[in-house]
Image (cartoon, rainbow, N blue to C red):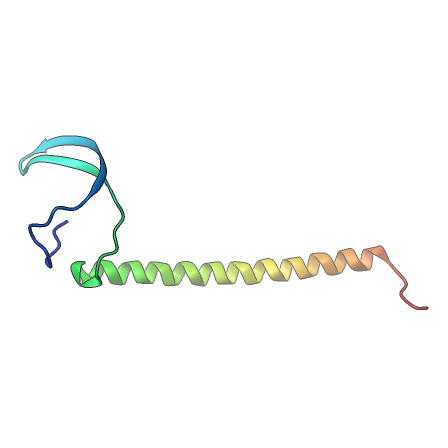
Length: 89
């Protein structure tokens, strides 16, 4: 992936994983060191796709948490009434 802001820059990596020869020359699969990149260095479509994925993931997690909470309240309410404790004095 070429970054337009710094076209000739060299980026760090952890290790080389695999190599292969193609019509483009020697290609290396690398394990990259994670870096924070300005969004302007990336294709807008990729950024938009990632943001939509994260929005959907948060929405799904939120609805799952609400569903879990409803189930927990129902369960503990049933357990409480099953104890049949008389709190009157």
